[in-house]
Length: 520
Image (cartoon, rainbow, N blue to C red; front, side, top):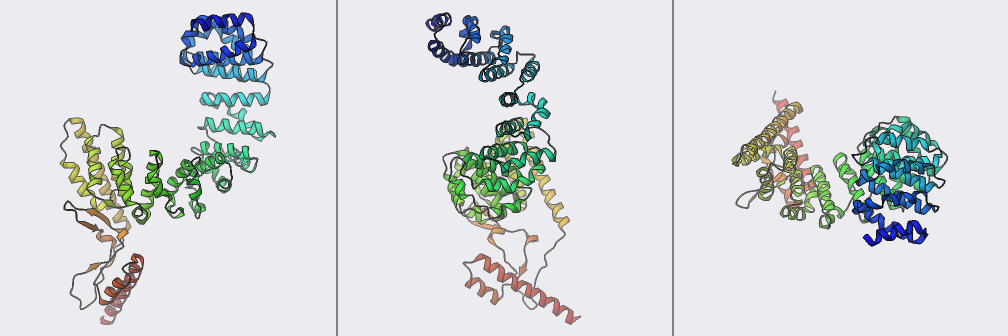
């Protein structure tokens, strides 16, 4: 290193361009990894800010920015030297000077960051250069750039695509801003522009719709059209935007086929983000074959977790989605990184066995972990109401070793109590009581007819499985010979059995009512 420093000093004096550029490339790595080593040659580095070749000046500014980001005291006496380069004749040098100042302001020891950035922005008069510099600053200091929002928005109607693209990037980088309907419209209309314009318009909508969702409702159609593009980045940003907006008009997503996108590694995660959000607001809109089930075997745990979240949400809507890949989900119960997501998916699909219960109880035993507390809150949210008493009893059996854990367990038990009360209140508000249908002259025990998907499947300690259905959600009827024949003929078609048996029960109810009226 000492040899390199001596060589650098000689190069500065000698003025050989190739040697200086080569040494600056070496110093660039050091400026990031261990800038303290460069302390003794800082005066020599500063000399190069006035080099006749713009590439040397630009590279020098980049190095100074790296150093100031980590070691402010090494550059604090040279801030004026950097600011002078904002008037450099070469635009690349000006951009590097602005970016160097921005990186230095990230150092906590820099106390006048707002003033430095304000001076930097006001010093630039060329609009192309100004927007480019603000875009660079927004990547590292978005909160400060927010102060110049009105000036930035003026460029949104510029004739130049280059300027508009940079404005969209800036808005997306800032993200946390309040817009009005007019500004949102000015952003949305760029979805009809060039490929690059549409790309960064989708990016801006994705970021800005987190806080201004309602204003971007009209962008849903054009964003869906973007999914037909050959550009993966455009598709990815559009999918992320749609994931934020899908709850506004969930019916617009019906019939949307995403299988092809799930096969594309560059957009797969963005597609899953949309699917996950859509599965919460309109699961019937999701048209996918077995692709989500196949993703349970993906090497990326993020993909596996989100696939299980989607399956769980679809399982809430119809248990068949979970049944398709039940064994794959159950396998994940043995994986410490995936067991929570697997448990939640199984609970949402109303499938609960000893392994599921064990995962829940293990989380209760380790309540000091905030992740476990979040997991248990979600468990209670989706746990079948008719089984909450059993879960309460199992948790109460645990004997925590210290007071803090005991308090946490009491919190969990309290959440279960609240959920039970909520269930009772909702049942009372509903006010619907299904009639008990009985046919006159029949003294046999009533038979409950229901779809398997309406039941909670529970595995008992002896390995037997039972199906539990709340009484208030079923009808009772004697199993007549006619119904027996239907079950025998259609036993492979659950939906058909349900439909036909339901018709028989309604018919019986009507006959009972007519008979009662005649008797009166």
